[in-house]
Length: 497
Image: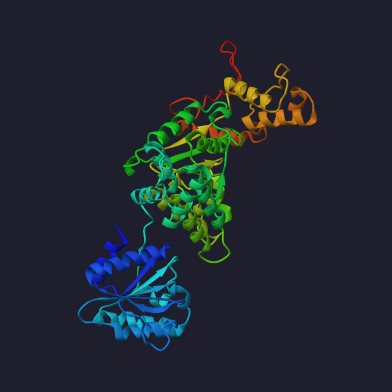
């Protein structure tokens, strides 16, 4: 719903306190001005720089309209019984710390019911004092739609060849979604200066700058695609098909993401980073530990802000590594962290259910027993995939890849790699190149995690059997456990016992 449509409803219903959250004050003011002209409402605006201004009047004699307290009191003279009077207070949240200003505003909002005086605070954040919470309704100023962004691009790219074709333009608009009108104009203009055409690369560069300013997410630029990963054929096909065949116009068909469960070193993180390169999407890394704040409520606010930025960066890959370590406290009663993990989990679950943006979530987990059960239920993810130890053919591909990467002799003898993961094969090749020793000798320095943590790995594989999808082949993962040997007892000579 447009901002003007929402304001028409609220003003007619006589909501006298409206808080508009917007980063585009000029565009919001233009929309409000156009609405007041159509509805024949009176309009006054105030900011600390230019003071109080009334539409249709050259000046206002209020005895110091640049003062916020004087601006509020001056609205008494602007009230009219015939039509509604709107006063827009820009960045007024900066002055609500004053008791006098807050009390005067509260009184004017209550009296505005009889005089039809509407107070509108225009602010980039919502910071409503407790005394005013019940007097305000919060309204979002929506970011530009695809049609509006397309109109901006067409207005900037006026020469022939500057505007890309229909298919390429859709990619540009995907990249520009989440930008303000001014940011979109800057990105399109920068692209024209650099490349004499509007290309998505410049738009993504501006979006990456948004991440630097927030400090909540990290943009990972990966140069490796699926060819750099040995194995995981079923997982690759599943994710790539769901991402490339999603319905942009039908949010019910949007892909949700996958939860990757597996033995450490089997390529969970590498797959998440390579998926972005394979599908042409940026990969955003969300480190939940970095969102922890020292103040009460700061952690939850950081999580909400990080998810809002991810929505603005869509289409993208959102990668959360070892999610069970960050949310394991949610399974308790809040004694360890005062309930921060539980509230953080609630915020994440609400976003996973409700968000309609084209954000593909990939979370990795090494210990399913520490995972909150509500995170892994149906419709949270498209699937829970188990990454087991690589089999012989996958290991051969991984050996070939890393031997070539580190410039080693492919004909030399390899060490015994039973129970090795891809990470351990890479470690062996790196040590061989680093120490200038044969692979067989470098393998003596590698102890696989399946040996050092045998019980944990076996327990994880047994849990995944029959519950998770197989990353290597289509269908449900099945763990073929070797039966324990038993002592054979001869029937011919039974025991005396």
